Image 1: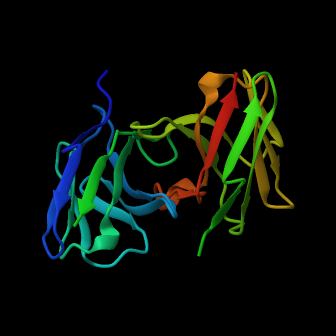
Image 2 (image 1 turned 120 degrees about the horizontal axis):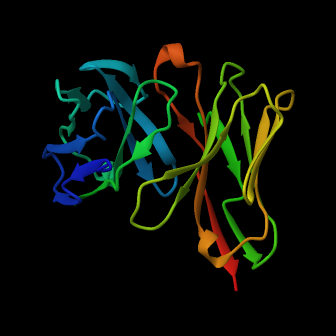
Amino acid sequence: KAGVTQTPRYLIKTRGQQVTLSCSPISGHRSVSWYQQTPGQGLQFLFEYFSETQRNKGNFPGRFSGRQFSNSRSEMNVSTLELGDSALYLCASSLSAYNEQFFGPGTRLTVL
Amino acid sequence: QQQVKQSPQSLIVQKGGISIINCAYENTAFDYFPWYQQFPGKGPALLIAIRPDVSEKKEGRFTISFNKSAKQFSLHIMDSQPGDSATYFCAASPPSNTGNQFYFGTGTSLTVIP
C-alpha cells in the first residue's frame, strides 16, 4: 500500500509570491490534515479536510488556505509569502477522525 | 499558546539506558495522547498512543505513563539503542466528534550513544 505522497519535496520562493503544495493520501483515507513544522515551534496544526469539507482550522492567517478534491487529494496554498513561512509542511491522512495519522515526508519551503 | 509542553528539548542516553520524555497539557477535554518518532528527512510516525482510561501502556521497549490528575504523560524507552536516535513528539487531541486536530509538543531530540 502506497504511503502519503507530497509534491514537490523542495520549493524555493521569494517574498510576496504564492505557492501550492499537494498531498495524496493513502488510498481509502478520507481525512487529510496539514501541519507546519519549524525548529522553534514544532508541529503546528493548519487545517483538516474530510470529504472535501474543512472540518478544523488552526490559528493561522487567511493567507493559508486549502482544499480537498473528491478523490481525497488535497492542496494547500499560501499567498503573499513571508520569510517566516519557511518551514517543512507536512500532510497526514487517516481513515477518519481518531484513527492513526500517517504522515508524508513533507515539502520543504524556503522563502527568500 | 502551547497547548502541549514537552521536555527536555534534547536528551543524550547511553546504549542500554532508559530515555524519559515528559509532556504536560492544559485542556482537560483532550482524550487521545499519541507519541510520534521522526527521523531526519522523514515525516513523523506513530510510535504508541494512550487514552486517559488507563494509566500505562506498554509496547515492546516503549511505555507511556499517564497521570490524568496532573495532566501529564511521559514516554519511557527501555534498553535504548542507537537506532532510537530520533526526534520524539508528544501530541494530544480532543474527542473524535470534532474531527482530527492534534496539538503537538515542540519535540525532543534523542541521541543514544553506543
